[in-house]
Image (cartoon, rainbow, N blue to C red; front, side):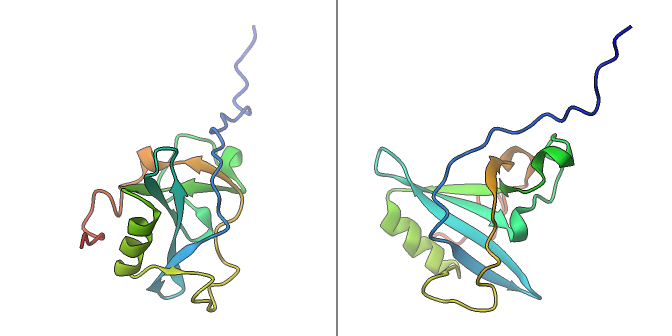
Length: 133
């Protein structure tokens, strides 16, 4: 009788985002949140958020081997355009890495990107950590 191979890990879909323009929010005690702005075809912009190292804090439903070396999108917010997105990031204590390098430079998440928003609590989109100005 054939048994299912439990060693085969379900892999998440890989997303393509330009991650050359990182934004960082220093939380303290060597902890940071990271963000990138992605312009949509409609002219709107989406900000995608990441934890240090691209980790996810909750179970994504994927075997850890399937996401090793990948970075998880943990939350996102929509904006009318890139300029508003950048302004809102600044007003929420995020800084562009190229404008404000520091000891966190080189620590931005690296790897292929996957969507873990369904398993994350939505720190900015659903909790009280985002100020709308």
